[in-house]
Amino acid sequence: MGGGKIVGILIFVVVVVSAAGGGGGENHHHQQQKWWKWMSSTSAAMVNPVVSSSIVLPLYGNVYPLGYYYVQLNIGQPSRPFFLDPDTGSDLTWLQCDAPCVRCTTAPHPFYKPNNDLVPCKDPLCASLHPAGYKCESPEQCDYQVDYADGGSSLGVLLNDVFHFNMTSGARMIPRLSLGCGYDQLPGQSYHPLDGVLGLGRGKTSIVSQLHSKGAVQNVVGHCLSGRGGGFLFFGNEVYDSSRIVWTPMAHDRMKHYSAGSGELIFGGKGTGLKNLFVVFDSGSSFSYLNAHTYEGFISLLKKELNGKPLRETKDDYTLPLCWKGRRPFKTINDVKKYFKQFALSFGNGWKSKAHFEIPPESYLIISSKGSVCLGVLNGTEAGLQNVNLIGDISMQDKMVIYDNEKQAIGWMSANCDRPPKSSNMIM
Image (tube, rainbow, N blue to C red):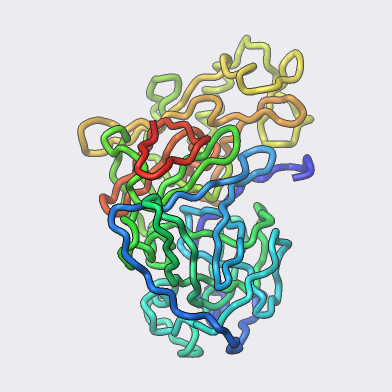
């Protein structure tokens, strides 16, 4: 990121509106593009349902200094690689697309060349991207527009293409799935130079929902982000031992996010009185966010704890809003974690006991390039998240986090995320 100011990465869908609707009253300067039929020699790929198997994909990247994780997917016939942002905060998978592209951002690979297999407007997947009563402007195609909370957006058309996956059973699978051909992108404040977004949310267009509807995997998605960078992403429930996971029920909020519902902030093992926090898990966000009231309470607890410790707040490091210097530059989190307490979010889950999502210092602090220690928890109200509290990548490091849409539960456990599991191996 060139040593400049890192803005918390935030890809978390707030609204999906019709392209024809002009952005739901916002003055979007996207122009809808009439879709041209493209000649294509793509043949239909059959899906062989694979019982009790999963898909495991390596992740690359880190929270700092890169600022995001990404996954490689191979799409099309012949297959071509694309680097995508794995985002549990949104549903639609889309690629920057040479349709031709009206506005695209710099990407690691040549833009996706679309085929002519359009998703018609009456398809249920199309309907799931639009408000009830949406009128098709062109019945033969499905236009979409996705707006993200960081101000970014993608406009395009939905089509079908072949995805290439290796299953943990050893089988290869090439399902035909729907994705967005994004021909007009506005980058948000947390823009990443990638080929597109991999939507992993709870909606029908999510890749894991589509794979599940084809009988390929259980409707379960999970990730394991390594604090040393990299990690893995998985679809299906064959790579973990469910009895070793801390589970809590998913809350049913109107935005369909992965939420564990109402949480309480625990600091250093003690209750803080900061309760009824609406908490969302979002792999599309590098950092974590607390609403303004909770953030202020958390900061005052931190500062009280640092009183008399050899750390002082520094104003000359702009990596993140709050950084501290020591007597000499810090090299790793190990140099400094003894000065900070663990915090946790506790969910009264209506089951046996409360589920604690524990966040040790190494999962909320970074060491900047200047050798300061900086806080990777930001004020969400200032970032436009209103009252939402968001657990981002930094706080999910070195944990396996599982979103089980079959059981409607979210689970987690400490894990070594450096090595993707092999076939049928459980994470130890």
